[in-house]
Length: 211
Image 1: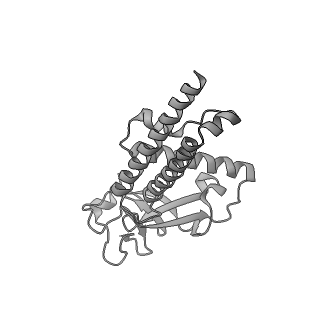
Image 2 (image 1 turned 180 degrees about the vertical axis):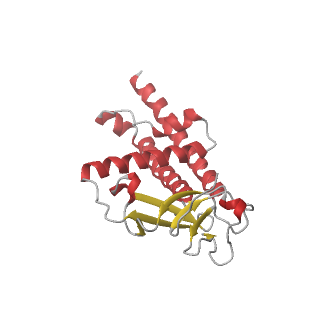
Image 3 (image 1 turned 90 degrees about the vertical axis):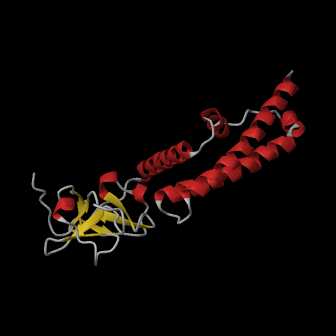
């Protein structure tokens, strides 16, 4: 089946080689398509064009680098990773209206949860450790808090450290950071282990206090 592409279409396709190719391209006025990695010397072949499908059109969308994606409907925003994901370009539908504050907040919460789930899935730690690290702290009385203050503070420090490490994984996965994902995962796993140690110690001490 012939693929019909128009000038201004931003397309996804299967490159013949991964070298200097993103797998995304923009169709020019002369009908040629150039990969976003380097629009000067990566013209798509007919075989590559046969695998293409249009993502959106630059006639309908414009680059908007400073918007918050979750402030708009999903169909009004396109995120295009280029240069192997080291550059992220945000496109907004022309004339798109911002969502009401409550809807934007809900979208932001959903996006945050999805990003965290993806980052956690990349870690090597057992699922039960991940669940423990993310679970709410047990409710403590004032007396229990005083008795366990050192361990509570250990948990709090470890939790902050792990959240920072997990956020770094998220940023790299999104393309917002140029760090190495494998290194970030190792660091996050180390911080998760420390948090799990602290949480288990706290649980044991609570059980001992409560007899």
